[in-house]
Length: 105
Image 1 (tube, rainbow, N blue to C red):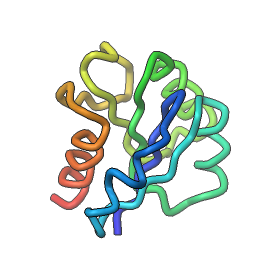
Image 2: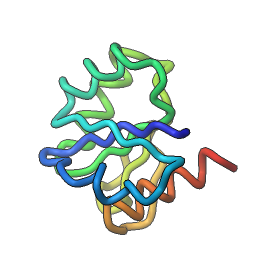
Image 3: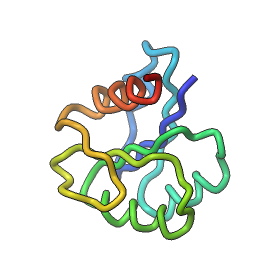
Image 4: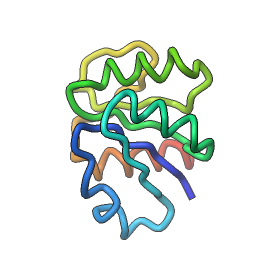
């Protein structure tokens, strides 16, 4: 099981969209502060998927709080963010699947 923290202003629907993927579990956060809190409480998170306009702020908050945080990913439309691995611009569901494939490899 791969656990991905999806950080977005409105991450609703990720769980339902990925229910058909039994090897991926999505935990959601609604912004940088929520993401830092969820990472602190849940050490089984394998990766963080940054979505939305606050991707850079979320990445900075996560790295500041926990430099050894799981790998961070964002679609390339978020721009270049230090310490964040870019993914193709796709739907949130496709992005989560791509992160899952990268972690399985």
